[in-house]
Image (cartoon, rainbow, N blue to C red; front, side, top):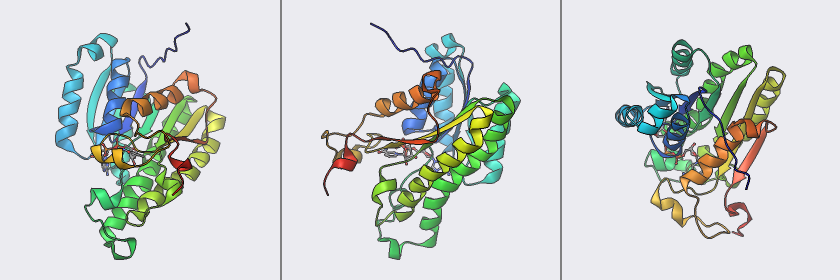
Amino acid sequence: MKTIELHFENKVAIITGAASGMGLLASRELAAAGAKVVMCDVNKESLDNEASVLAADAAVAQSGGTAVPCLCDVRRWEDAQSAAALALDRFGRIDLLLCFAGGNEARVCKSPLPFYEQPREVIDWGLDVNLRGPIYMARACMSAMVERKSGVICLLGSVTGFEGDGRGAMYGTAKSGLFNFVKGLAKAGAPHGVRAFCVSPGPVLTRPGMANMKTLLGRAADPPEVVDFILYLASEKGAFVTGTNHVFDGGRLCVPR
Ligand SMILES: NC(=O)c1ccc[n+]([C@@H]2O[C@H](COP(=O)([O-])OP(=O)(O)OC[C@H]3O[C@@H](n4cnc5c(N)ncnc54)[C@H](O)[C@@H]3O)[C@@H](O)[C@H]2O)c1
């Protein structure tokens, strides 16, 4: 039987939201496949801890991969620039940008209020982390990709970008903004060998609570299922994919509600 091999040896990847969940898993997979990974997150303790676990990992050492922590708040323009500069100074180029940092503001800010009662800080967090962040990161990384005529940018959307959310209204708004942003990135990047795609999961078991979200298949996704799909699209196997949003939801959007 034909096996599908994905090659990431010596690729340089910037990954946001790398201290937990799918961003951490993608960092592990890429570093173990021989990539140089710049792990970006605001959670310094988890970031340092996870990066040192990866640095000591036998599979990573054997593959020639590396993982370096980068304290980076994607809402800050300067931090996005610094993350790109770190990758360029240390590894000389940026091949991949995977934007996992994100979350529903009502959950992350512990503010389960209807939108019309949400404090401004909660609204700002939802829009800034989920929309401004990927925009700043893409802007910071893309010029180096264009210069080298090669690069891949992955955005993380969500089915909430189609459904909306009465509490975390900015989450859905930002994610649907990414559905359009990915087209802008693809149009700007195509003449220069840079691809962009968005993956929009339904429920993913990075938290047990996600098991409660209904899907046609009666379960939530395991994080490796989503990360494998992303890595396929980010690899040479996905070379024809750009400007598109890929729903990965176990039929969630087909469930009558
Ligand atoms: N888990 C799901 O069910 C699900 C479903 C649909 C979409 N998604 C999307 O997938 C992505 C990853 O989800 P997950 O569940 O693996 O995430 P997670 O909550 O496990 O991890 C998110 C990471 O982002 C980091 N982060 C938060 N704010 C940041 C900032 N300002 N700058 C840099 N890093 C920051 C956090 O510290 C954390 O490490 C998110 O964008 C999420 O919206 C997840």
